[in-house]
Structures are given as structure tokens and as C-alpha cells.
Image 1 (cartoon, one colour):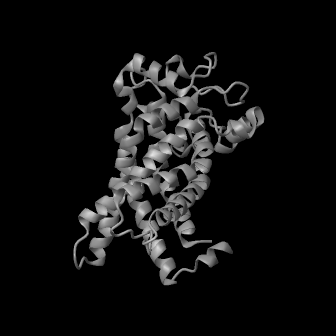
Image 2: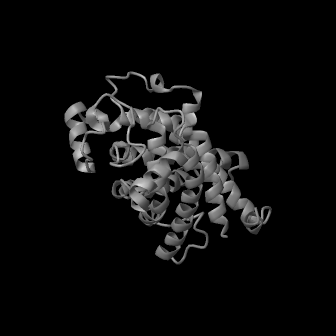
Image 3: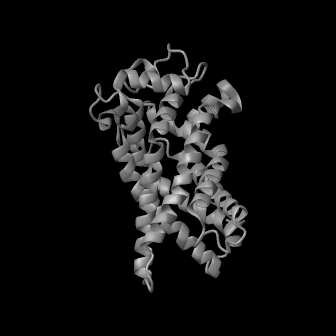
Length: 304
């Protein structure tokens, strides 16, 4: 397979391993009621809760990240034939980078939508026996393959907008920080810093959409064996409520808690985004360089 596929897959899996504990906190802040539960840590039944729902993203997000980078690189080349190396788009207009990133986000939606749904419901379920696999089986048995794409519409909008800003902000940051005759140490620090900044910019651009997505996917799915998700004190997550769409969730959340509800958990998410994406971009750039120089043969990974 292509080197950008494997570089994207491995860096994506590494990012999830590092960032999942903070992602659990972020999801529970978004889904719950801050007034009723001042600290999301009060709802962690034991330390293992911090890795709750990690299996689906580790498997899924590696593939998602691989698809994202492959689609981004191919889209950027299609937008500008003069690009010799999509991983180093020097001189390419930033609007083309944003469009290519959005195209990559839309392509990755096929994996991100079911992965996000399974992750979200596993993280919010307080029962210790519930795993990502349990959630996935319950959804599939009750609603089939279509059930795994519950909330897919808002997930695709979040991914397209977010990943557009992801690649745009990363390349913009690199342009501002690139200097003549920079050392290898400076180049490495630049990648770490710009990757972290790209993560923060991305989540800042789509956090309200992500909050709505979380609450949408946390709703009980009629007939599902994982219907009860005992998080928060609002009626939003109670099984007797009819399933609401994205607009209804946004309207009810605003009426109940005001504008601040759309940004609850952004601080935790920003810390996570900086750490995860700094490591993820550094791993991706290092793997791509290694593949291109032949120190790691991409074909060798196909035999694993």
C-alpha cells in the first residue's frame, strides 16, 4: 500500500492511545449537565473508565487517519497538478489546502461515523461490562448497518469543516515558522508545535457541532440493548424521550443552558488536541520521510 496510508494509520492509532483518557472526559462534559455534576471525574467508576471506548477508535481511527491523508494528498494533487510532493505543498494557495482537507474529511466519514458512535456510547455507559464490541453488536442487532451511521449527517459536516481547518492551519503555521538553514532540532520542534496548533484550531472551529453530535449519538436508540446511558441529569438522555434531530438538540440545549453549553469541555479538548496532534504530525512526518528514503519499506508492513 501507499506510504501515506501506513504513515496515516500508525500515527492515527498512536494519537488515540495517547489522547483517549482526555477524550473520555470531554465526551462526558458535553453529554452531561455541569450544574448537576461539577466534575466529570466524579462519574468515573474506576481507573479503567479512562480507557473506556478505546478499542473502536484505535482500530477505526488508524484506518480513518490513513484514509484522511490518502484522500487529502490525492485531492491536493488533483487541485494543483504542479505539486510534486503533496506532503510538502510549498507555494500552494491555502484555500486549495482547505478544500483538499475538507475532501479528506468527507472521505474519512465512512469510518468516523460508526467509530464515533461506538466510542461515544461506550464512554458514556457506566456499566463495567460494556465494551466497544458490546455496543457495536447491540446497535447492529437492533438496527442493522444503518444504525452504525446514526448521527452521520452532522459527523460529516464536522469532519469536512474541521479537517479543512486542520490541514490549512498546519501548513499556515509551518509557513510562518520556517526559517533559512533551520537545524533538524528546530524542524522537529516546528512540526510538534504546528501539529499542536492545528489540533486546537480544528476543534475550535467545530466544537459546537461536536457537542451536538455527542448529544445526538448519546440518545437512546429504540430497540437497542445499550439504550440506557446514565449520564447527566437532564431528560436529554432518558429512554422515554423521543429521538431528537440535530436542530432540536441544539435548540433545547441553548434554551436550557445558554451559549456556553456549546463550548463545555473545550479546555480539556484543547489540551488533548495539542498533545495528540503534535505527536501525530511528528509521527506522520517521520514515517513519511522514512518510507520515502527507503529506511522502512511500506511493502514490509503489508506482510504483518
